[in-house]
Length: 109
Image 1 (cartoon, rainbow, N blue to C red):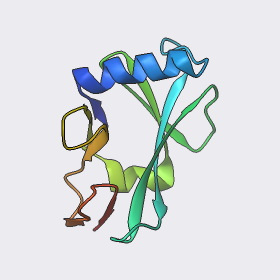
Image 2 (image 1 turned 90 degrees about the vertical axis):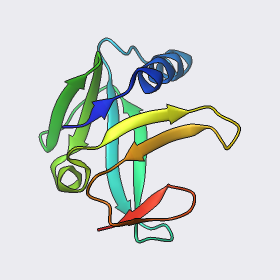
Image 3 (image 1 turned 30 degrees about the vertical axis):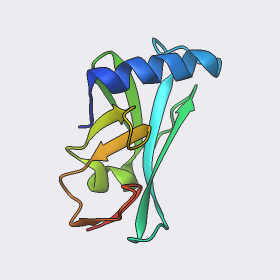
């Protein structure tokens, strides 16, 4: 399961609306891809459809789609949003990551 903090929920709803998506029926697609300075990087985008290979989670009224191959890397992750002085963006608090890079956008197991 992937959890969504209250601050991430608010930002997701705002961004989805700006991009023509509806948070009550569309998906936040979260995944992992090769790349980044630590080996793997996070991928987050919006989607109107799910595929057969997706695991679907609903947390804090946000529906999240995760491809099965990415799920093992993301199980237990909490998606947060930071808008502070040190930068803006989504933060993946991933208990499976052994090492993360300085920017927090990539990790390794």
